[in-house]
Every structure is written in structure tokens, then in C-alpha cells.
Image 1 (tube, helix red, strand yellow):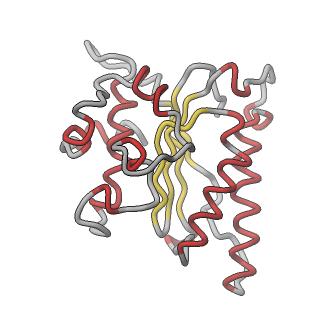
Image 2: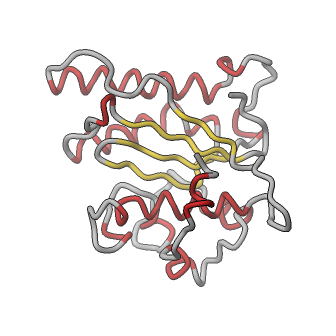
Length: 201
């Protein structure tokens, strides 16, 4: 998968055999540290959610943040950053849990959201679907009763409960269709159709 400038991507992976990848709060914070170190220098993060056995990112490839002229997808800084992030995190967890083998499924999934074409729908419509889907994950999994009760997602930053700096909130409001500061909380609870959700995977 090539990462094209000024395109949005849904990136996700889960634990091998659907096993947990996070075992305590410190693991989540360590993973966020790794995101800052290995992924954030090469793209803007619009939304994220870390779940006990999987994660989701919605990213935007910004020419000024780390593009590449290489024709090989594996040479892109985002690809390299993801590999280092997951590999180094896995090594730390294997030591912590006294385990061996792959922590994550072998291939991280990457879906370009910007190239989904539908009649009479803005090109960034599926950014909005992905944004809401990512934040609704803990609610759908019945881990919390309200989206904002889950600590390890970007939702708290968007509604002003936390001043996180991992996500580029201003960019998200500028480029994601239908995303409005005034109505964000209400809109984040909107039901998503199965057809729309399937298109972001």
C-alpha cells in the first residue's frame, strides 16, 4: 500500500489469535509514546482508539510532515514507522508477559478512505464514518456506557475533557466532511450503517 499525499487512511491491527495486546494502563501509555516517536513525525493523526486486543488510527498524509518520493510502498516513512512501532512494542510486551511469538497479526491493515467513490457524496464522507466508528468502538464492545468514558481514544480531546496533543484537531475539523465542533458530541453517537462501515475496511 502506497501512502499518497493529502489522502486519509484507516490503519488497524489486532492481537494474534485475537488475544489481548494491552494488559494494563501502562501498556496503553507506552503504545501512545511509541506512536508519538515512530508514526506522528510522518503524518497527522485525526483519530485513534486503543482497545484491549486491537487498535485503530485515522491518519492524513501531509506533504509537509513526511512524504517520500520512493515508488516502493515499504520505503515510505509511515510504513517504516508502523513496523518499528509494532515490533518494539511487541518486544517489550513479550518480556513483560514472559511470552514468545507474534503479538500482532502478521499484516497491519491499511485502507485508503479518500479513494472511496460514491455518487453525490463528498470525498471526505468516509473520513467522517471512520472517525465516528473509531470512537464508538468501546461503546459497541460494551466496555463503557458512554464514549467519553474510554480513556484510550481521541474522543476526550475532541469534546474538551482532555488537552491531548496526539491528534491534529484543527486539521480534522477542516478536512472531514460534516465534522462540526458545536455538534460533535451528538453526531459522534449517530448510528452507522453496515454498508458504510464495511467500506472503511
